[in-house]
Image (tube, rainbow, N blue to C red; front, side):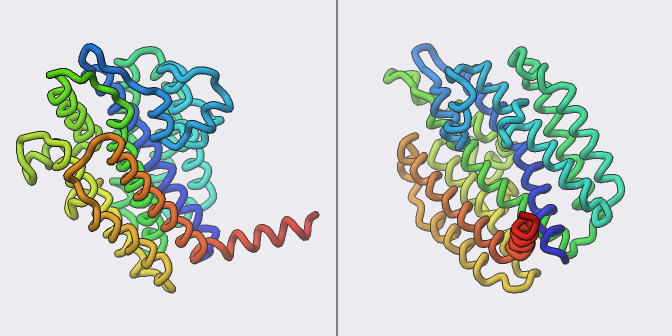
Amino acid sequence: MLSRVAESLYWMARYLERAENTARFINSTTQVLLDLPRGASFGWDTLLKVAGLDALYNKHYVTANEADIMRFLILDERNPGSILASIHSARENTRTFREVLPMEIWERINGLYLYARDNAARATHSRSQRYEVLNGIIERRQSVIGLLVGSMSHDLAYQFLQLGRNLERADMTTRIIDVNSAVNLPNDGTSDIARERLWMSTLNALSAFQMYRQHVGVHIEGPAVAKYLLTDPHFPRTVTHCLGEIESSLSVLIDYQVPLQAARTAWRRLDSMCFDDVSPAVLHEHLDQVQADLASLHDAITRKYFSLHQHSQMQEQSMVQ
């Protein structure tokens, strides 16, 4: 397979996953706001740091208020991680290699883009409209993945889709969990109940509430939720499950040793993590380390499988100059 096509497939999958999980991230934040007790506060600047977008946001906006942050995360194409920008990038990547995908995929992704383009502004008007529009994006994106899984040969092209999808999903799962660090709760008798509701919102944001109750228990406790969402091997949105899918895809490819070693480093990090203390500051530090491991895994995949294409591009540009 051409390195150029492999990279486009990888990034198409990452962009689509990023769009869905940013929608989940925002819905989780909205639910947190609705559940805050009196005396609690929400750090919008902390939320931007959790998303890894604080520096870019500060280039274009003066204050970190809800309206501007929602606009930045949903429809501002100056932010390449916004929902609209991510879907647009996925659409443009898909346009260049339509021949390796099922015929209907282009129509589904184009329909997703048109829906997002036409409704993104409405998502910034009110919280109720925001929830409705973002759910529409999540549902349409899931129909794309369902079609890919059900009608695409699980060949080399599919493995690069899997790499991109699971790497992005693992990273975004850590950021959705980390939303808790943006909430400052009052030091009174309501804080324990409020923290429990925050963790419930996290489970709901990842569509994990029912599976958590089946496999862990009916009580929503921070350490148990964090451990489940990071290390459960069976639920498809946990970091451990995503790493398992990444390893399976790498095993089909050639020269997978270096990326596999990077994946194993992330595994070891999760295995050594202690969940006795999941206070916002401690958990935030652990999640930052996991995100750094995932970034290293991305770099290893890029160097091994996409560097030839990137090197050729650099050579062509130098010849033109």
